[in-house]
Length: 245
Image (cartoon, rainbow, N blue to C red; front, top):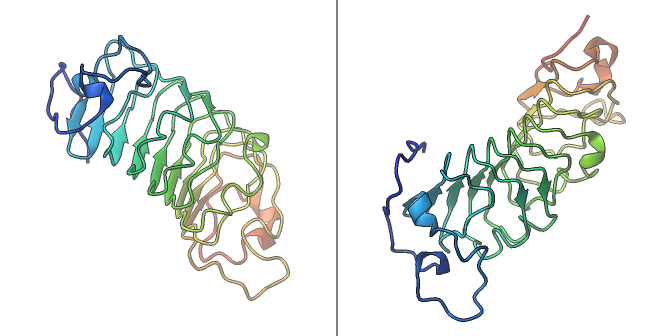
């Protein structure tokens, strides 16, 4: 669901019991900034959803969210970092979209408690490495960052048994990371991938293996000639998109 960009600061919902929404605060409460405006004054709050898009004045950190938030959109702001505290108390989150920020660092446990998170979008940021990812993730979009292979842990995706959509285009990856069997779509276009092995998508020791789930592989815009690595994708039902000559 796409929301129109808020033109002015309004309260659309005050049903949430959140420390950020009240003035009567208990002593010692943990707040990011005592001068920070309540989230639902800066953003659009609907039942279970918070939209903080192109917030003015500039939003540079993740705001305190209502405790029952399931969908959080904070696109096109100036957020630079995601900490372990930002989402620690919001176990109900199912979708996070932080497209178009300035995020260069995500602490490794920032998403570790989000057991319901299915969609995570971090496109158009400045990430050099990926943090630990929640086990139930279905879609991950980190297109248009500055990721290199050393910033992606070897089995970070292999452990995600529900991951179906993986978008890693327009980065600086030198190799294809190990991919889970559940994957349907993987975009690796416009990276710096120069070689593949027989185990990149297939199982080199099993010529009868077919990767039935995989529907689309994008490798265009890489300096690799796919025709030189036919055994790397012999198990796929469709040829990867990329350079063959």
